[in-house]
Length: 196
Image (cartoon, rainbow, N blue to C red; front, side):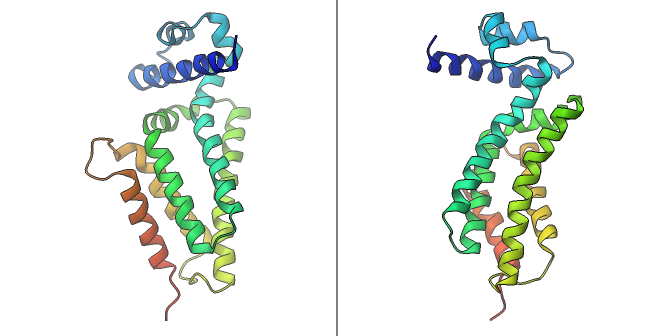
């Protein structure tokens, strides 16, 4: 079996799980239903996921893994703090909007995760939060950002908006993800602007 075929099976299982979890909930969905909807063999499912809980974790883990990789690439550019923060917000908004159903399913069902997977999830989120908080703190220390609020409060504001996005964003709505990202970044950076 080629790597492409294996990856396709994994993608189909994740897509089927998101659709079924969204429609009938985590508890109301069996592994057999996911396998049937994805059109994969039972062995194909267990090649990628050890359990239904592992599958639920990957519904979000897939998204946060991509977001963390993008974060690392953006930070590695070494751009000015404002430009870096704008790029981070843009990527978070656009990737969350592109995976809105995926994110919404996870927010609703994450309490089903065991302690170990909950801690994995928290570590991944914490790494992103800490990166943004440190960026803002460094920017304030260097005089690039105004100290209008603590770095933690600014970070909570950014993630508060983005975390709620799956609840209200509609692909067919008036605003495209890029526009939402621009408005949020403009709002945050206006608040952090150093007075002339």
